[in-house]
Length: 283
Image (tube, rainbow, N blue to C red; front, side, top):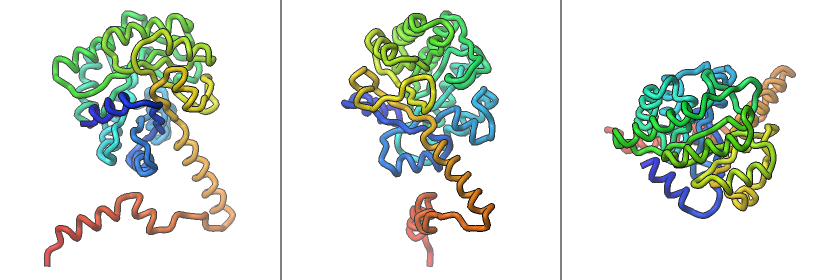
């Protein structure tokens, strides 16, 4: 199952380098490049709608995006579940829906809804009690319904209440039963080291280019104690830069450089389609 594949990766040595995707195409490219897993980023999915990451998308849209990603690839997917889209009961529904969509692990966070990108201004977090209730509801839903899905618990408390409070929340999430914790936006290497030394279990680092957290080599992240290194903007930025350059070339009356058409066909799935077509062809 997807979650079993992810568990197997987590048990192996080394950091899992995880480029973030937004749709089936970006997920296909990640798998094609040889990465063992991907993270469906709420920022990237929102951007694909032409929107900022301020929870303008709801449960149904995010679940649908997750389903499109998981159906396009065979590697496990961690998917952004935002705040769970409501109270603790909504969290339970979200867990079931994401598991049914083929997600290996769901990330849930403690921001006040509507949440926003963790490296932007104006975010707020719910009380520690409410944050714990969200994760408890997720764990309960998994146990009550026998759901085969991992849970990542994220806190944004560093920006509001400081590193001490953020670490304490992560400890509580781990105690409740979260499989992975994610302390968003630590500001120094020392804070990253403290988080990893004080909180048990698997931990994710968000390597957001030009963000608040230092971007470190994977070897250093492993030495500090991180298990996952997510790169939320790597493909999004590359695609924007590429599209802007192509548009500027077209404005000059020239055709932009492109992939060979045969390679483009292969990337989007024509090669596999044609093989299946031949297999079931009738005379």
